[in-house]
Image (cartoon, rainbow, N blue to C red; front, side):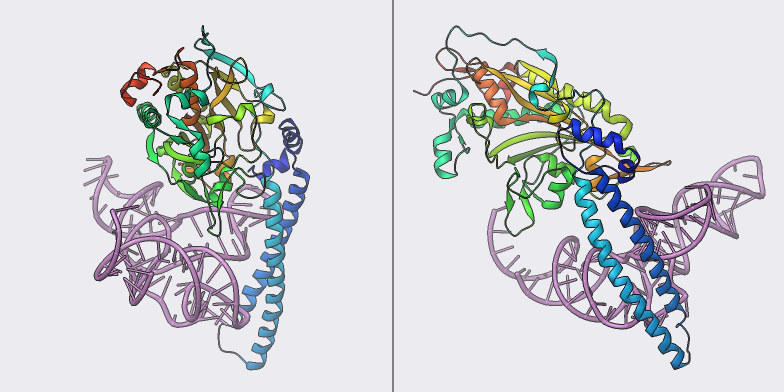
Length: 425
RNA sequence: GGAGAGAUGCCGGAGUGGUCGAACGGGCCUGACUCGAAAUCAGGUGUGCAGCUUGCUGUACCGGGAGUUCGAAUCUCCCUCUCUCCGCCA
């Protein structure tokens, strides 16, 4: 969340930002609750002072009658404190609920817009393939090659589940190794994270663990959720810590399964592997000093480009518009791969996303750093290295041949152990 | 899963219901001594929140939470974690 003092001192900018992001939140109410809270704290501190002074008078031996008077006074103060404390708890809860609704400020250069159509394309890489045959989509290819089985996934686990089979398995595992090798080269510490996280971490990162519209699976009665991304477990890694400035930036790479409810998401652009309840993702996560986050954000985007250039996948980079940023991001770049099976003519589909969340998550999760001069919240950034399901779509659809066989990009061959996948029958 | 022991500041480690934000030792910082260093001596050395004269005052914090009390690091209850032993397992 934002610093409440910042909200108070920059009310107009905060309001303009909320409307640019197409969100609803009430900063006036936040400021009002904050001021109420402060005067309540002031009042409580005075009562506690009175209590402490009263108690101090009773330290030594004293006349019983005088003692009884003081005890009565102490009891009276105690009642007031108890009452004040419950009012304060209530106020802070309301303040917190309200303050959390306020999104992060957006980068001044982020394009203003309502939805993903308004994202600004900033570059392209690779050639969109042209086929002298009618290209198949990845669902058909997966079936033909016998590497993705949606039918059995649906029978056993429900819609939007799938089995990877045969070469599909090695494709998934190979992509993980391929991505990790690149990330290690760039100085990331590789991790395999838990696939479950506590609700407070999930919401600290900015996901809503509850409610109809939540994209998160909660585990009944445990206070935990299935993670929607390793961003959650990597961001929780240093929650509540005071980091040493000389250890920054901390760069973590996390492999995890990702679970998403995707309630209500349907339609032609969500078919097959594009939108599923479970997939594997290799995520980048960085904790850094505030002055470094802009450069590191560019670096994360470059790494994503390196990964997909290595996979020979044609893609474009978009600068995400204010309305499509989500609450925590200050700025966000998406890589959109060309997917020949998308729609009638092929289309761009999101394959990675990297966000600079500045100190928005760090304030919620209480991640700070210190050096000789200061203590401050760190900046936190995340970026997709490879989201396997979507990477597999882009490989199958772009490198397919007339008979349905698929060429494996050169750099991936050593990781998967074969150069092409051919139809089984 | 069962039994026991424990959790106090940067670290180690005391702590009788009031004189405890916390002894003592170490570390670190500042100053003195020194050509310099070491040793020695003196002083300082946590965090959050609120207020105002922005440096102070107040308040809270001794694993976390609830309670008893005029008053809790200290007493009670619950939880978490660590260590030891036993059991079980991949």
